[in-house]
Image 1: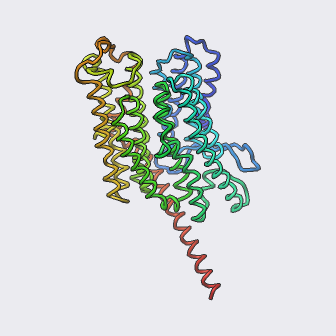
Image 2: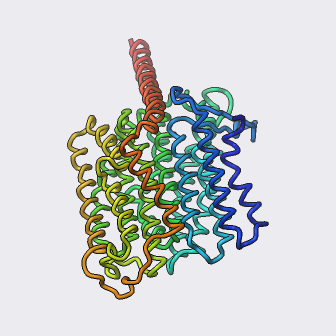
Image 3: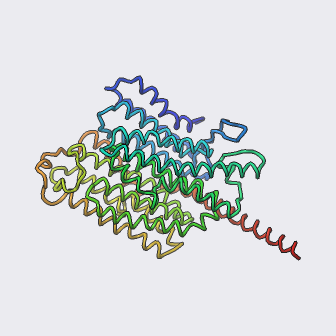
Length: 508
């Protein structure tokens, strides 16, 4: 198991370089094999992972710029384990379901490079290495949207890049300053997150640093009012781009809050708890209402993603085990469900080259398999009990109920509003008269589509009934995170009290 995390990170990139030598007519098979092997490596990490240990496991360290404490440091805990598994699994599934024919070889190589950056983000424990993977992930997605997207693909890709890159630059300034603070405090440079967790920062400094990191993470989530790039990106991206964007890239923002903001700035996190909750509530309610107003099926799913990400933020800033654990589970469930929904939209788009609800109707009669799978994913999206969507939403709301019952009741509207816009979508698309003669001859889900979608359906039901395999390792690490926050908050309080008493003594 030595260096297994490095293998997990760089194997897709190595395979991408080899992909240049593969014949174009064999590239799809090659991509399926590579992503399957990557998924198997992540399963091997899970097999060797000790769920009872809250600390980082499989740690690897290699010096990069020793004079400034910049090192290649990777590790995994219960928080990042299943995000990595979801990343490798959803990439594998999206490659199976890939229908793009134009410049397929370029598409596959781009996706493999993107997989490397996404896995690297979840495993990096050095802030500079984390930032490098974080920024590198923009380039493949920019290319996917810009090269294979719709009519407004250039506008959508540039807007995506500018928003996320600008926020990331502010975050980088925060990282560099935090490295300097560690140098002043400890006498040596370090950008190792495990070293930074030992720092006790003054409250005022925490506030400014929280804001710097917030801009990077909030734009990626995206939180209102930074969300306007997402509907364009989803609307113009090809199916595989939307699947990976919704399933993985958005989760990098919420993961950043949990990995950096909460343990490094615990007092500032508590200070900003209610403002963050208000932004989350606005996202939950406002974007759900916008989703209801959409006529484009893909845009409904896109805005629903923003609404569900609001619930994840709410659970994260509950700052208790139930809320944070629930938000992590909801990241995984939303990745699976939203990825499946975008894949399902891609199925009918490939047949009709339209995503407008008005162009469909009565699809349940001509595409019963497709309609059944869509219904299951729709129910998971709105949080039906015994589906994967219910577990994360329930725990996230339960966690914040301990903070504010009123806010939680408002947030609970996401279930009601989600049911409204999703059921309206389903009614218009799958029931009623067939509005267009072209729909009468549509082919039901078949072959490669079913191979990609059925495993997602199985996960939605199995993990909805029995979520323990994920919740147990996650909660072990989350309990440790909450303890670190409490200890650091107590130490900061004691430090302030000591300084106050010394000041009073000097005055006397």
